[in-house]
Amino acid sequence: MYNPIVVEKDGKYLGIVTIKNLLDACTKVEVDIARHSNPLTGLPGNPAIEKEILSRIFTDAPYCVTYYDIDNFKAYNDAYGFENGDKMLTLLAEILKTCAVRKEFIGHIGGDDFIVICDYHEGERYCGAVVERFSREVKSLYREQDIRNGYIISKNRNGVTESFPIAGLSVAGISNRVRKYENIGDFSQDIAQLKKKCKKQQGNYIEIL
Image (cartoon, rainbow, N blue to C red; front, side, top):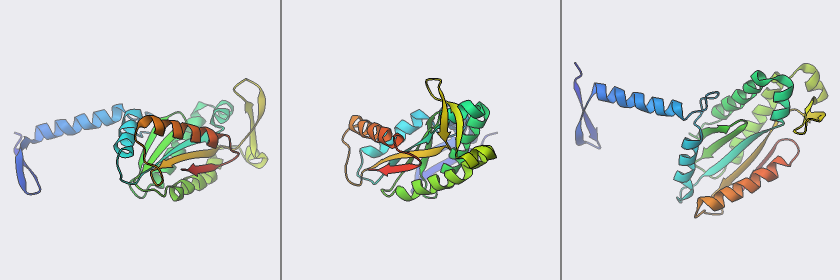
C-alpha cells in the first residue's frame, strides 16, 4: 500500500523510507511546532527562541537579536479589555512578519514581549520599519476621542488612575558587530540592562548595541 521512497543527498544513496513513515514524521514535526508555539499569535515560543539564540551567539556569523516591548500595554488592556489587548498583540505579530523580508526569525516570548533574530548586523532598518508601521496602525484600536487626546485614562500598577500615552514600542537589540559573546550569561545581562534603559525612554525608542 505504501511504496518506499529512495532517499538521496548530494547524489548519494542514504536509504529508503515509506510514505507512511514520512507522513508520520511530518505530523510529529507539526505537532511539536504547535506545542511550542504561542496559542494567540502562532509564533514560536521560548524553547525555539532559546535554541535560535544559542545557535548564533557562539558563532562568528553576523547576527542581531532584537526585543520588542509594547509601551503602556497593561494600561490599554485594563481600559479596553483583554479582547482588544489580544488584537494589539496580533497586530504587532503580523507587522513583524510583514516586515521580515530577509528570513528573520520571529518569536513570541509571552505577553507583549516579542523577539526577532536577524542573520545580519544592521537591524536598525527592520526595527524602524516595524515601529513606523505599528505607530500608524495601532491607532485603529483606539477610540477617536482618545486619539485626539493623545492619551487614555486608566489605572497604573498601584491602582491609581492617570493618563497614559498611545501605545508605542521599545526595541532593544544586541549584535556581534562590535562584541562577540563567550557565554549566555554575559549576553543575557547586557540585553536585560538595555531593555530596562529603553523602557525608561518616552515614546518609541530603538537602541542596538
